[in-house]
Length: 327
Image (cartoon, rainbow, N blue to C red; front, side):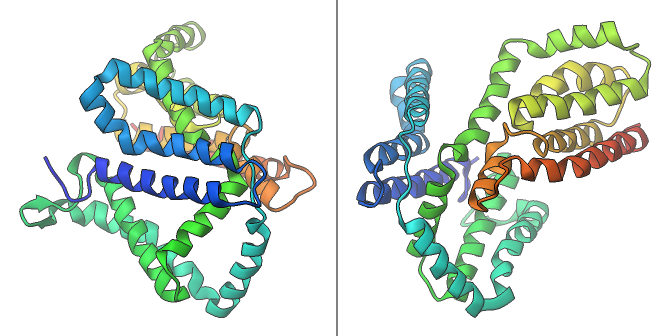
């Protein structure tokens, strides 16, 4: 079914922004590695823009090989420290602070509008149509809602700051320079979860759990699933990489099929348990290491150390919630 805001439109928008960032990187003479930095983001953005066209004209096998080659080139550029940052980072921060002081607390309104509009559109936007087409992609309703909410927040931010969308792209360029390769780490780790599923890692975990815990031990299975989600997330750096493996190995065969648990409650709380692991690992570089670098903290692991007590407390609450709500 066609829609005005479909998954393809989302990919094109992401690719367009990344391409603009690549162009700005090439033009940034203050960046000592501007050519390799621009190439990195150009290759990354080309996957979003040209992926569907390559698949339609070249077929899936060749397209997958090309995209795999692009990923290897990206890893080579990042591994050889080919990503740099221009001098605009510090100057733009001073400029941004002055504008924030002028706008005041209203600066938080666009950011708060994103989750609010996303929830409203997810719940009520399924029936919305325009010229006979659904407004939002019915197969990816939440993602389409998030994109539309982000566009509304961008419009609100431009209205508050009396600035243009191009300035938003410049600020995106500044943040991308500051974060570097860690920005794409969640996407790569999420795809790694698919690789583990294809390698039948979940079946190996299922066999291991069968040896360690009795199938009728409800609390033991919950502890294994929630704790395994947190632990595997700490290893992988991303809950989306841990989710398919742990769910296929523990939640589906033991909790959902064996104990007849509510699938929605199990997978939702299980994913939340994975997020607890995100708070406790340096592998989640974009969450824990990059903020420490942006804040210029002396200890790059200080963010993780502060988050560990909260993560463990939330993980314990998740175990109790699953035990009480999923059955």
